[in-house]
Structure formats: structure tokens, C-alpha cells
Length: 378
Image (cartoon, rainbow, N blue to C red; front, side, top):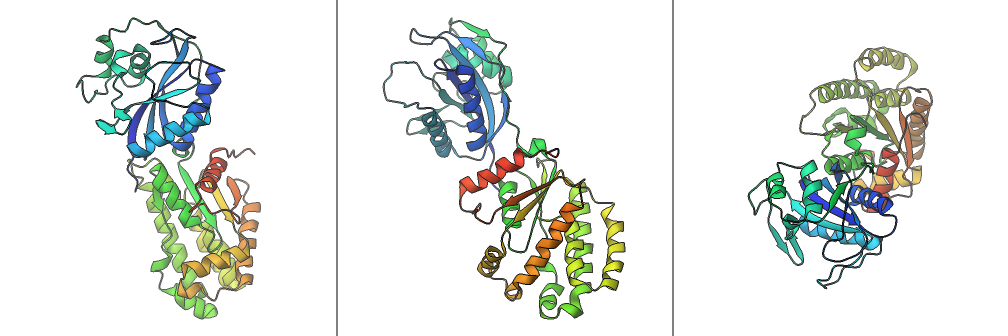
């Protein structure tokens, strides 16, 4: 589990399309640094320390798992994306974007050129006014006073005016969804994706306990003999795990992400069981299905069969090594049939055959973007 820390950033712009630049910077911070909890109003201020165009200034509160070293690297990288090049000169100049780290939890940091709390923040009303708006009671770790009191003690006489301009705060997965279910064929990467999302967004993980099922190795050796026993044991375990996991929600977690949904049981049972046993199984399933909460978004990860076989071989579970392509193709068809007949389920299909979201950050980000931009109406 990654440690989540709270940092406060100051953003300013005095050249170009200032409002658009601030919005784009906020979006990049949400994408590359962390969840934006609060955005202050936009304030117009006179240039500070030099004569030039007025600034638009804001402060934001960000929840991030980055450490201070990585945080300053990301901040500088975002500035670079706007063409901002910092230098060692003490002279103030125009800038299309300026991002300063004001506070990082209650820590005092001296790291290369990074000093936190920002050494000049208590001298600047264009920092303290928007910061007081979103965090008046936060204690400055050196001054040992609240930000609100620090503002009252500030001698800055520069002009600052609250505007009617607005920024859109990017929402996080936890704000958009309460329950995300990730599904896919054997070896599609559903558990890996669930783990990454859980770690990055402080979500409660509900993971399938297939490794604890004593019938699974026996099934792969003798499918006819152990199919019904296996499917019933999986159904009972999935029912209890989802029912308990979704009811006993951890107040310290932002949402739930699971690497399966209970309908998986019916998909596999349809493939493995003869007609008579499947009909009996279906009756048991219908009773349990009514009591299970439905996910806000049902994500199906598609991998082509060739890639699935590579993944299965790579992870090296002995009882999976004899899985045949036709069996994987049957499972995929079963999922598609389920998806096509369940219009009420908010389904997002993502083709990950050419993606490596475990090792490639851009691939992972592209999946997160698809999830965040998903609309059940589309």
C-alpha cells in the first residue's frame, strides 16, 4: 500500500491564455501527481517583485503518493510541458505558468533546490489569500501558526482581487465510482490492474480466492468429475466474499475494486457443466445474484488468445499449463454473450492485447483515462 500524503501547491500565470493555462496545469497535476481535493477561487494580483502584466493565482490541495523528491520532479516536468524553463536568477520575470510547493503534510524539507514550507509564502498575499480559502486551519510547521493567522500577520500591500472566473476540478475514480468490477479471460491481467488501481487510489480490494480452492487442480486433471463441485464451491465463495466485502466497507478506503464479478460463475458453469447440472446450478445462482450489489462500472479486459497463453505460461501456475486455446475462446464467447444480454450492466470493454499496463505507465494511464471518461449513456 502506497503512503498518501497531502501537499498544497500555488499556481500562477501572467502571459498567454491565463485561464486556459491554469486549467491545463490543474489537469496535468491530477493526471501526473495526484487527486485534487480542493481548488481555491481564482485571484487577480499585480505582478510581485517586478512591473508587468497581472497574474491569475490559485492554490490547490493535492493528495499524492509521491515523495518530495519525485513531487518536485513532476512539478518541474509539468512546467516544462508549458515551455517554462527555470533558472538560477533571483530576478522575477513573466511566466505562463508558475507552480510552487507550499506545504507537504507538516514536514520541513531541504532537498537540493526544494525548500518546504516555501520560504517566501508568508510574505505573499497572492499565496496566503487563496490558501486560507481552502485550508485556513492548517498549521505552518515553522511559524507554528494557522494559515489564517499567518495571513492576518502578512505585511504584503500588493493588490489582490477575487474574480468570477472558474476552474473545473478533475474528479478521481473514487468520486465517480463506488464499486468497480474488473473481469477478463484467464491471464488477461484483471488482478494486476485491480492491484494497481487499489494501490494508487486507496481502494478496498476484493480479490478472487482461487488459490485456496482445493478442487481447481483436480478440475484441470479431470473436468468431467470435478466440474460441478468446482463451480459450486466457487459460487459459494464468491457470493460470501462479495456480499461481506461490499457490506463491510472500510471507511478509510475511497471505493471498492474487485478482480471479478459473481456473474463469472455462470459464464464458466455454462462452459464446464452438462445441461442438467447447469440448469440446477442456474437456479442456485439466481437466488444469490439478487442479493449482490451491482458494480458502477463493469470492465472487461480483452486479450487475444495468443497473448493469454503467453501470460498463462509466464505466471507459471502448474495446473493452468495444459489449458487449450479452444477453452479460452469458449470463455471469451461466454463473456461476450453475457455482456450483450445485460444492458443494465454498465460495461466498458478495453482491448489490452497490445498494452503492458503493469510496466508501461503510459499504457496504464490510457486505461485510467478510458475508465474516467466512461459514461453509461454512451
